[in-house]
Length: 107
Image (cartoon, rainbow, N blue to C red; front, side, top):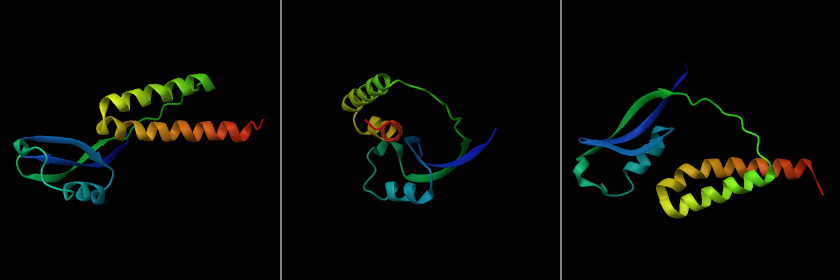
């Protein structure tokens, strides 16, 4: 199984909850401001080898795509910034797929 490297911000007492694809992103996040949760202790960046994600292909009707988009919108509104970070790549893929369909089927 293929692996990839991710960078996590950790503290003496746990993992802060975000993974970054490159060290610069992790450093920028670490330097954004003070530690939001002092119970984690001093923060540092840890390089972690993870399994490369397996791609999933999914075909949706236009209506199903719209429904998925609406469900993501509700989840983001309910879950805030952390959910938004997770949802954004999926929304981007949905928007790109919708654009490709509309470009290939002009009315």
